Image (cartoon, rainbow, N blue to C red; front, side, top):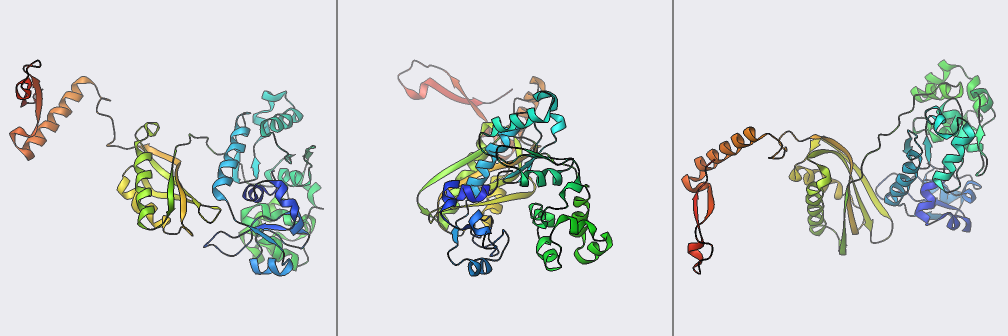
Length: 386
């Protein structure tokens, strides 16, 4: 666990957060909820997901830090890659929080949990809270109570009964529960564990059932990500771009990305469109296509609709491949087949060209007199035959 990771990246470093209460401002065009908050802001009762108006009412001098989703994604990718370098299969859906099964790498690092913790610290090269437990939620609670230089181990879920109910905010499925449970007088995980399962299901639905399972030591399996190659194109705009100029820049980025040799004929299933804003901060949008695409026209049509949501003029634009699709069925290279199949395909192509353009639709250059001083005598055009 790297506490306040998104806020620290957006603020330019953790030293900036020591100046006073600060919170991550809502992204432009999104709901007005604050993001991660500093330790000083927590002292005023501000927590992530609180409405902006309520947060400012509790602390009028709260500093709002513009979000930097592009910087957060780049920084978190470096952290996850460092963990994968020690052999871990990492689940890292949320920046600042990564989980992996220690049993898979135990033999690589001395056969002990202490060896794994030491390997993680060497890989990260930064202060981190490390926790271990039989489930993801137990390890999360252990990391929340750990310190930067000492890991914490939770042997069973019963040890968590004294922990605050706010730990449920670390799971997207249960993030909205702590506020409602607090109004009902449920303030610790032990209070939640004592409630009947049927009552939680009746009041909160599936999130309540999941919370009940978590505090009793039952959790969903880990979903490690599949490491992949990074393929991206960036374009710096000399002037603040918007409107038609931004659309031309998008066309150029799509053409460059599809022309990269590393693509190797594969289609694109999901891409990430990012921009550096002139007024400060960044903008990032993940786009999943309905079907794998390799057609630049269709890609530009989809991405231009997302680009219209850009909240301010941009000074740089970036397009990154998030997930590849299968090879395009019609995108095989001409020379992938054998000699016989290649000659047959070329012969059919010539036949179709002549059917449309006439007998002179497919010609080849024949060198007649290369040393002649008259250019017209050096070479002539003759029908192309196989």
